[in-house]
Length: 433
Image (cartoon, rainbow, N blue to C red; front, side, top):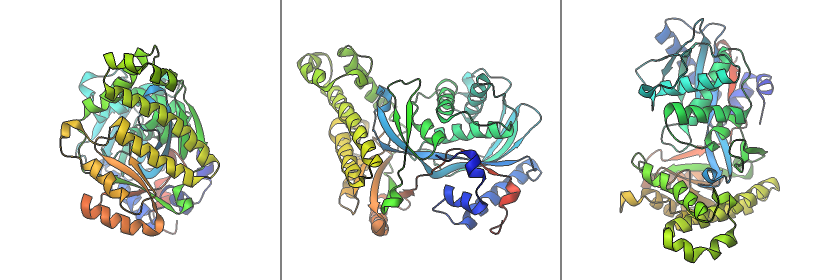
């Protein structure tokens, strides 16, 4: 993790290279120039010297599939895809946001901090929720004008909502000339905004990964204060391309299937006298199998097996990364993927019947030059993840996209920094800045 002062001490070229290793400086400066032009078009003025460029990353899940909601272990990382915006403070408490792809301007009066039913599920609720959370921390939110653009596509499995929440937190702090809260405090603030204002239940993994930066091991034994440990891990340093592949299957209608996973795991835990599966020992689960089958489904029990195995795997994967044993780490990635197929059963959606796009995606990846493949994120639809030798990435991409469609493969780079202020837009106007 790189701090904001360390980041600010870098040259413009170094900042761009750190955040966007897959893009040329010309492309990044062009993106910023487009934001400046849109700011001027929407607000009738160019950004002033008080304006700042703010960036917050998306995230990828590295290890620990469906473990966080039962106080388990995970590894996650921030990535180069981000929410980028120009933020200029106002003299009042009004926030206006122009977001690329949305014709409507979002306007929120943030001195009013109570959650509103009519805003649930809408962008405005995130703004209000983040403002309210910062106020409880003693950071009085000020108004700002913003033009933003996101490369973290909604539904990509890279946590667009967490990236937006962390971006808004950084934007409020930049506008007020205040430092961000620490990453865990930022993550908790953002989760509260999503849970209680936006109205979507979620854990903390996504927000912590976006707020922290780099690869992190997270222990949710105490869900109110998770332990976060930075890991020195970048697949590119080991000759590997980390990719996600979009299966093309929608998960808009899969709320019940997602909700069933933590519910069934929790039901097994309760039947064994525990609150979550983190408090269950494997021997206790095995001994109780005859009794459990009288009141619970076999699927619930299989998912409990997955949790216990996966938690041990994350510990082993963390140790492998700490000691530089990448081959062992990749073996465990494959074991995790197999467990998700057989035990967790989140590689195909029952409600989709014979349509099994994600399962086909995984099966095809296994037949290509990938070192390891696994389901990514919630599963059932959406994306899978693979580690591909860099020299074989073009062949892998070509074959996957021949079947799954153009643009299905996205390469990810671990971003070593969380939300940051890049600087004044005037310093990013040309390649020789």
